[in-house]
Amino acid sequence: MADMDILGAENGSHGRYSVTVDGHEAEMTYSRASPHLVIVDHTAVPDALRGRGVGQALALHAVEQARAGGWKIIPLCPFMRAQAVRHPEWNDVVNV
Image (tube, rainbow, N blue to C red):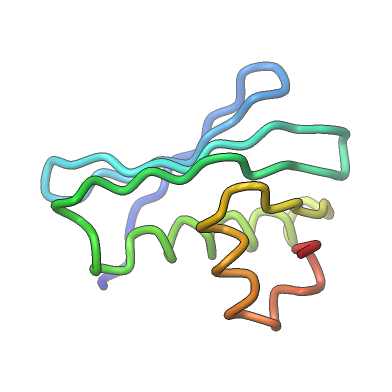
């Protein structure tokens, strides 16, 4: 999949990453447990975008943001947990 324009937004301790592809929005939501810990709790990818790497792009974005911000991720979301297991190179920031 081509480079996606993933947007991030935080409101208090809650945040989300979102991307719109072909008019469909996918999102990953998280809660900030502390300045150095986020809990990814939900990933939603519309059926129209499944199989196109959108969820994986959101997961990678979360990992890149964690590395840049110096925080760790607890993947409560089953999708994020599965991605973390498939990507041991993320172990520096994802606590599976």
